[in-house]
Image 1 (cartoon, each protein chain N blue to C red):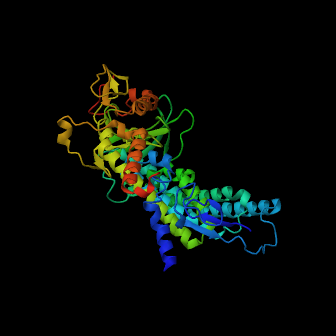
Image 2: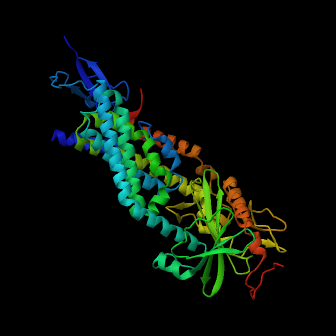
Image 3: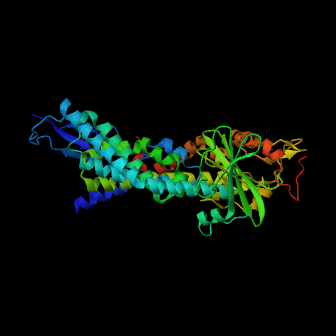
Amino acid sequence: MATKKFRCKVCGYIYEGEQAPEKCPVCNAPASEFELVGEDKPEKKTFNKNSNTYILVYTAVIVVIVSLLLSFTSAMLKARQDDNVKLDTKKQILSSLPTLDLTQGDVATLYANTIVAYELLDVEGNVVSKLDPVDDFDVKAAEGQLPLYVANVDGATKYIIPLNGAGLWGAIWGYIALNDDKNTVYGVYFSHASETPGLGSNIATPKFQKQFEGKQIMNNGVFVSIAIVKEGQKVVGQDQVDGISGSTITSKGVESMLKNSIGAYSAFLDNPQQPTNEGGNEL
Amino acid sequence: MKMNEELKNTLLGPLSKNNPISVQVLGICSALAVTVEMKPALVMGVSVMIIVALSNVVISLIRNTIPNSVRIIVQLVVVAALVTVVSEFLKAFAFDVSVQLSVYIGLIITNCILMGRLEAFAMANKPWASFLDGLGNGLGYAIILVVTAFFRELFGSGSLLGYRIVPQSWYEAGYVDNGLMMLPSMALILLACIIWVHRAVDKELQEK
């Protein structure tokens, strides 16, 4: 006599016998969780579901349907996504200016009102080309050229330099806004792709970023960047901020990002093109 | 009536007696990764719930046509497609949320709860039951995530959902956040404690 088949509703285990087992040997579900599997279903299939032809056709159809679905979705939403990315970049640039309130009003308008110029500099610090800050703000700088945003905040000129570096797990980036003395930090903004939540990701918090405000990147007219050190340590000849405990590598990543990204602009920083009243301590 | 009872079990069973994390011990990897703070844990829980439910329905609808030898791949394709579509929509309509979720959305594809439910339930049940099963399992997953994240954020950062709970005066008096809470190893210990408590309360779960 043929045995009956019982299937565990919890884990799918198939038991063969006259009666459902007391307990599922895989997941310990009680007998009540078993159901009889109708094995005497008439075989009315006209083709073999496990034949190679069927499998090939089936997978091909599934893949085509799925890829159509995906490309359709992607094409439909592309324009919106690009707008979002652009708006987000504008927002990030503005985030380096701590006095702006980004929660109020339209970011795009605020951006158009604040950022007055987008320039590409050569390594000597000379302006190579001036681009429209609103429409061309995401034009990539060519090799050997340095992008620079100029902002006007309540009548004062601020220079915004994009930063790029590496954290512990992935890319980190940000923007640093300098006062027109090209020395004092007006504000910073950092973001990251995949730093550890609760540890390295704290570089994106206002608490960490606030520390940079008012720090100086020059020492006696020479670019020295800003050190990020363990709480309580002291660095000579350089301004410093506290790193994040528990994420030394991310903190170091921010430090070298500042040093490398701003360092490329040293010719521009050493050479104030427009004489300013306040004048920092560059020569 | 019996049918309803069964459906209710399908939905509510995974919350406690059949919890995907604390009883079946599935999805541990993501449970360790996203529970440092409450917010990602909540969002991850909700996303997993939606995607398990949807993919359960899709697989259940086509279950009778899937060739046995490639079923896992078909399930994977469906899950990956759903996850991609959801993340595309998030990028278009809720950009801020998608930035916050970043890698987590992609991680859902590799969540073994999904494969487990598709393989064990959706392949053999009707769409509506599969939908409830997905919802229940997602919810069971979310509950454990949120509980773990609650303790990790409270003791690790002194805050909940980003709001400060431990007052500044405590820190001035010498209170220090527990850095171990931030590390995945502590999440594992916490999960073990949850399983322990769960089994102590629900005697049925204990092995003899």
